[in-house]
Image (cartoon, rainbow, N blue to C red; front, side, top):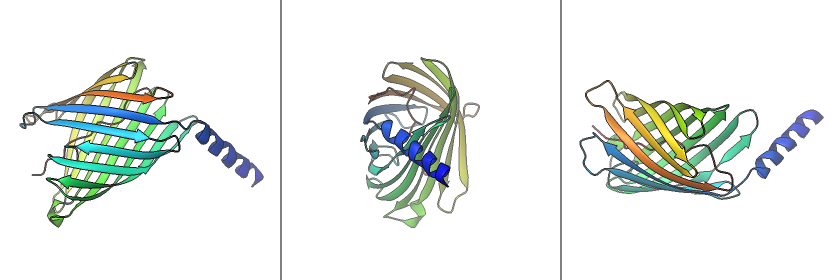
Length: 217
C-alpha cells in the first residue's frame, strides 16, 4: 500500500509539473463534398490548470456555431496521453446540446487520437446522432507524419456510416498543414485541407484530429 501511495504521488506531481497553457487556431477546407465554399474554423484554449474550451463553426452541422468546455487529464510516461471530457451547446441551423470526448496517445513516433460526441437536437429527436473521428499515424520525420483515419456517424434510427481515409501532414515550427482523403477508392471521395497554428510553452509534435462535418441524409 505504501508503494502504491508513493507511486500515485509521483504520478500526480509529474502531471502537475507538465501543466501548461495552450491556444490553437485551426481552419479546414472541404473539396469534393458538393457544397462550395465549405470551411470549418476551430479555436481552442487550455489553461495551465487543464481547463479546456473550444469554439467551432460548421463542425457539428453546417451554419451552426458550437461551444464546448471541459477538463483535460494528461500525463507523460512511457506513453504520453491526454483525455478531455466535454459538454457543449449548439446554435444556428442546428440547436441542442452535446457531450464529447477528445483523446490522444503518443508512443515512440506513433500517435492515436480520437474525437467522439453524442448530440441531442432541441428541434427533433430524429436529428440526434453519434459521431466519432479516429486517427492512427506515424511521424518518421520532425516535419512529416502520415497514417489512416476513420469517421463513424450514426444518425438516430439509421445504421452506422463508416468513412475510411488517409492522411499526410507537414509541420513547420508551430504550423501544421494536414491533408486528408476520405472514401479514396469510392466515387463519393472528398478531401480536407487544413492550416493549423498552436502555441504552448512546449510545442507539441502535431495537431489533434481534424473536425468533420456531419452531413445528414
